[in-house]
Length: 359
Ligand SMILES: Nc1nc2c(ncn2[C@@H]2O[C@H](COP(=O)(O)OP(=O)(O)O)[C@@H](O)[C@H]2O)c(=O)[nH]1
Ligand SMILES: [Mg+2]
Image (cartoon, rainbow, N blue to C red; front, side, top):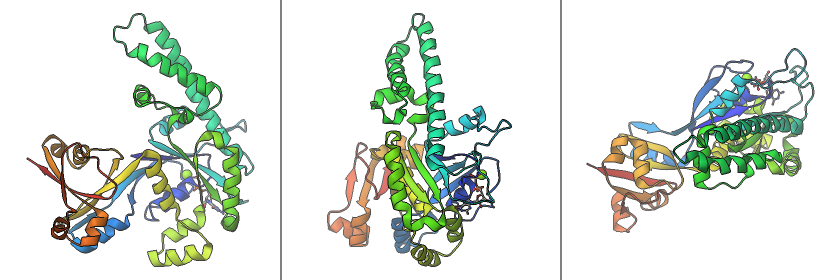
């Protein structure tokens, strides 16, 4: 899974990116190259399992974060979308707009003033026009080819593309259009930008932490139609915090009045937007968290560990994390009926501990 940080130049993307990498990556602020970082997903439950098994290896789930170079002002004083930029945006499973809300005279803004709503609308409009242009071209192309084409894919595709076009034409992002599984499948290769799950991360001034909830509510009310989650964060101090020990972090966060770190908010929102969840494998060699989509079957989950496990799947031994912590061992879970053998169609739940039996 890959999420992309998208926005204008100097909105705090690279500072946030560095925060997500927990201050461990070399400084990215001010740099313009695209970078991808594999971010560890912190998980309390995995830590507690590791404390019990004391494994040789402890492996967190990961998610890839892509710091996309921001949009700049060009020579004619306008911010322009480039195809390089659009291609970089297309490559992500979900998008986070990073929008500047901080005042800082020493840092210029490509549109010369701080205006959160304007910046959000700029991105939404550009992406919507990109989708509209694509859909229009696609409709023309299908019209030309549909008579010659032997398979019925184009016949099935046309109404879906037309439905999307009609929606986008009303200046509504495609993520607010109801599409069923088959329709989404037909569209999946096209990487439509406004169809991607979206969260808007607003980089507020560290001085405005106390008022942030009210500001977020006001912005939410104005951008209701974009169907996006809003995440306030504070890039500059959060970067400092991310370099501290966990204990110090907790103390300073409380002092500042920050309820949840940017890292935690971004990862939690990514899981929610993408419909993801975690399951665990445990043992003396390794305790590990794996990321899967909700509704994955035991066999699909096994396939995430190894394709052989998918192909040679027999059964999954399953204990929920809560049951395991309650009883303390697999043997005790068996005594209490909390240990189960499930077949390949079993729908894995968040926090399941799995052991895959295969041949
Ligand atoms: N005062 C202040 N400065 C910030 C904040 N976030 C980022 N900056 C500064 O703004 C500049 C641009 O940030 P950067 O993360 O490189 O932006 P990017 O172009 O979106 O990647 C850097 O000098 C940062 O130190 C913030 O919350 N407050
Ligand atoms: Mg940058």
